[in-house]
Length: 338
Image: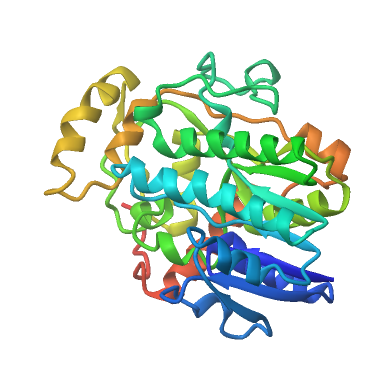
């Protein structure tokens, strides 16, 4: 099958290209002329140079293509909501329009669990009652979480396209961890902990999925996903404290002992954001508004409808990511924890 992957030079996109080639597909890698090609260097892909803002480049890239994986998107740049909207929303609109023009059989859109909004409660313990699923919808202030809001708006573009007859399946990965995360070599929490740059922790929770599990979820969505439906690609739910302790155990460092109340951390979001242009912070200040939220997710729909197996534990993903970060020079060999 002829397959186009947007965002092919990124973390998920490059791993997806590799998996598609292993399955025997002909892969066309869509990327900008300025994109870093390191993660595609050893792959026999056909390069399609273009931009999400250039509809003609997308239409050209989709000629004779049966399946499109739209993984491209902007995660960084939370203080530039205009650019984030242009890439994540308008770019997705262009991809879907080009797919309709090229008579593409199916599109798999990589959204995010961020598009589901914020948990209505913040349980201190993980329980089924506190898990978000695909029925949850956006419920947060757009200006406080531009990324999540633009992913939500992009999903609305998907629904419009489905209404016009395009076959689109949406996948919502949680926090994806593993080897090859080339664009987070300094911002990853794993790197921050390994380099002892994380001074304190706060309350809250997150969900971790191994990169290979996320990729298999994409492939399963292409095979068995229902058009117009979204599927959470999630793995292990962990409190922030437990996650950082797992990272510290893998990296041989010490987890921060200071745990700040979520209310205090949220109060610091605005002043720290103003200082962000002058001072480097280990965490994006805008995200501090979400302190205390337990972002725990259920992946039951994906397991039942897509036939996905049990996901790998977070510790495996952390270990593989840490080994890759060390190999890339992002962290030095850790000394024993003190």
